[in-house]
Image 1 (spheres, one colour):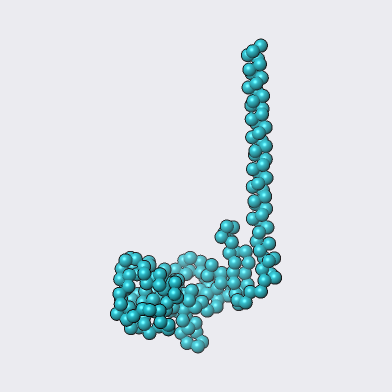
Image 2: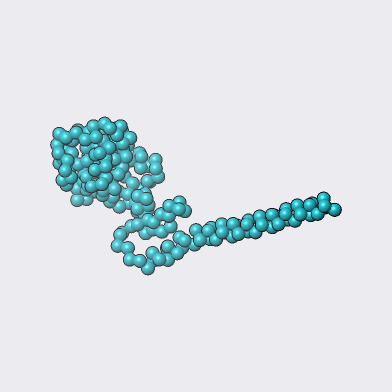
Length: 194
């Protein structure tokens, strides 16, 4: 009789355990369904908010890093002048060409670039420091100096752009400065820039 009583306790324990596991599974499944539904609806909520928001830019692209996709944009696949975003690719190419502790000689041509960012001719800069200054202050002379000794830098910049999916982007110089009144230093789309 005692043995039968122990077996019944064991079966009741197993039954209670299975019921709790079932309840836990249902709760977790509901949470996952709610999360999935919220993630599906979030872009629509953001899009609705943005429809009533005045954005002055001619083009923009909004990317949700959590979902890993674009959720909203305007004229975002049309190539337009990129300006200083070009310096980012110049720095990438320089960091691919040099070790970060290599030294870069600042030429007179680099100093002739538009703007004064505290760099002087005949200085020597560590590549990593010059890259940081270039990105932080949008230094035209820094961007120019980082790639000026690489005659293929434009090919490398344009090749890298295509390789990483920037299909609407073309670089014409290392700074993004306008070449003349009719031609920008680079063109690219807002979607490419994200």
